[in-house]
Length: 255
Image: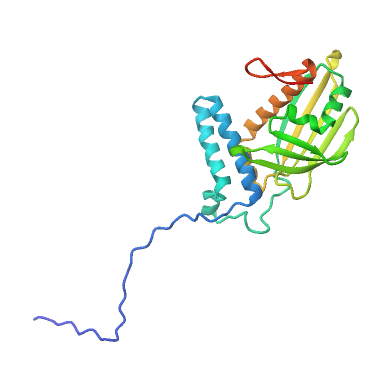
């Protein structure tokens, strides 16, 4: 026996099901301005270092550097987005304990007093520190540093000398609010057996974004430390020979 379905009431609710829309990755800015600067600097440095290596590992470093560089240019981090993190929000700042440290040492056949005197004049620093475009001395203890950045950009900040022991040690730190927060120190100690002076250069960076920022910066701190050692070697060449030799055998600076 056939059954008939009751007619639908005109007032009966009807439901429709739609397929779920795929979630689209948010491209909103979730990286603060200071962290973007660090990403541009670090990503560019890492990419250049990888390209110069030329081997498989170098290619991987270059690709990673490109990704970090893009992060800085766009202001969007996909990892942050997936974790629901945004350092662009007020209060998302760095923790003082999450520092990245770099160190370079060299023995230079010159008296400590002469090396100290050259380093104490901040206008000498761009002659052998490759990432410095220039230094403007503002007072006996303050200077404005201008850094070279990828894509032809420049970044400037002020730094202040916080400890100055003549002939032995100079320590400095960036002023509060600087785009690149860091401290640095260089010490000069007589080398044994009358071999000159042992120079110890240390830099400490406080990346934005807390541990996430420290993890990011740690991706390229090895390449940056290699560059720091090369810069100290340039200082050694300048002090011992009066000039800095370039890769083609020419001199790029004279004392």
